[in-house]
Each structure stands twice: as structure tokens, then as C-alpha cells.
Amino acid sequence: MNDPRTTVIVITHNRRDELLHTLDRLTALPEQPPVTVVDNASTDHTAHAVRTHHPAVTLLTPGRNLGATGRNLAARLATTPYLAFCDDDSWWEAGSLTGAADLLQAHPRLATVTARILVHPTTGEEPYEDPIVTELRHSPLPRPPWLTTPALGSFLAAATVVRTDAFRTAGGFCPRLWLGGEEELLATDLAAHGWWLTYADDLTAHHRPSPHRDTRLRRRHGIRNTLWSTWLRRSAPAALARTAHLARTVPRDATSARAFAEAAAGIGWILRERRPVPRPVERRLRLLDTCQKTSTARRYVG
Image (cartoon, one colour):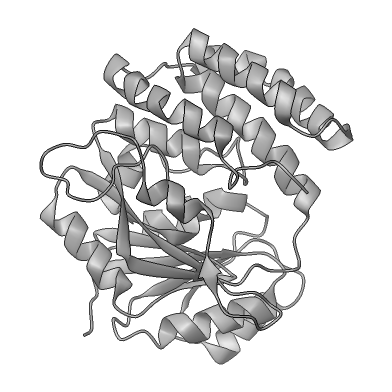
């Protein structure tokens, strides 16, 4: 079942043991994909552990924490037509990389394939579907006649395989966003370039959420990046409506206030870089606005 079409890219920061568990799973896959790890300036001897336990894995050590844009670094060096993203606490199920590559190969206008996500509780309970899966499965977006799976407006990086050329053409992940909701801007840019995104229910990515995460930092960046992505690409009415909705619904605390302040501080950059998407893409994104407002899986908590 060896399938060399997809390079798996894993970004990590100070999660050595979780990363080694993920690499054990990835290197045992029957597809035997090439794996690249980007160590975002870990201080827990992650790089040494990878070299010791998984010498066949390509290890990149940029010397600073690049966040999500560490994936851009790995993507520039990849020689495969497809890229599969992983976090250090997630991994792919056997056969799913091949299934995603088959979909991308069959549909030249398809840029991303997002898999079903199974969450593994650290308490040892049975795995369960991530709540976001229901929304992906029942996406309201219209799809082109050639696409038989649901069309998406965005994707989740740790459960997605992307076409390498499309990723590079769209510019990869924006360095300014760093990490936290960084997918939305890239997904919108892919759509603006004429690419389609899809969800495949028969493919699976696994996620064992790390207890070593700063939930408040993630929330702060998530709110800020949602605002920036909206201001950069959506129509003025849609951007104003989403901003107002977030202001009404996020927790009223110092973390949310700081997120809005950081977003406002980037207004100069926003005005220079703002490029609203074409009208057909804006019409598709509007269909997702109601889903986002009522979603129980997209809450800014922590």
C-alpha cells in the first residue's frame, strides 16, 4: 500500500512526548509517507528525541517559533503533489492519505480534502466525533456537478490534505496570523483563485488534545484572526455584521478585550492588504454566516 504522493507536515512546540506518539503512528502507516517535522524552537529536547527515535523523519529547526507558518517552510521543500497537515497531538488513519490523494488526483480543481475527526480523550474513554464534523458533513454550500462530497468554506489544518501547487499559489498561511484560526484566510484565498474545498466522511484523522496548551492565548488569537480574515476578504456589510456579532457574543473579559485591541492595531495593514473576494465566493460565504452564528462547535472559550 506504499503511496508516496503525500508529504505529512507536523508542527510542534514543547510537546516532545506527544510528538513521539504521533510519529510512531505516522511512521507505521501502510502508505509510508515522507514525514517532515518543524520544531518551533522547543526547549524540551524535541529535536534530539526526533533524531534519536525517528531518524528517517525530516527535521526542520528554524530557530524560532513560526507558529502555523512553519508549515510554509516545510511545504517549500516538499517534492510531492500533496501535503497532509498534522499537529503534534493528531495523526492519520491507515488508508486515509491514499483516499485523499485519490480525490485530489481525480478532481483537478479540488484544493483540499478534510477528513472526519475522531477525538481521543486523555482519560481513556472511547473516542468520539469532534462536534465540528456534523457541520462539515451538512455544509450548506452548493457544489459543482463534478463534486459528490460536501463543499466547504474553510478547513481544519490538522485533518486536511492539500494540493501542493494550490497551497503555494495562494501563499500558504499568513505569517501575521501566526496560529489560531489561521485556516480561514487561506481557505478564502483558495476559493478566490477558483479552487474548491471538500469534506470526505470515509477518511479519518485522529486527535488526542494536548493538556499542554494555553487556552487563553488560543482564544485571543482566534478572535483576532477571525476579525482580520473577515476584514481582509469579506464585503463591507458582511465584515461589519460579523464584527458586531463577535463583539456581542465573545466572553466579556480581558482576553477578548485584548484580542479586539490587537485586531484594531492592525487596521493599517488591513487597509493596505484588503482584497474582497469575487462576488460568487462572497455569496457562498454568506451561506455559512448563519451556521457560524449558531454553531456550538466554534465557540471562543478558554
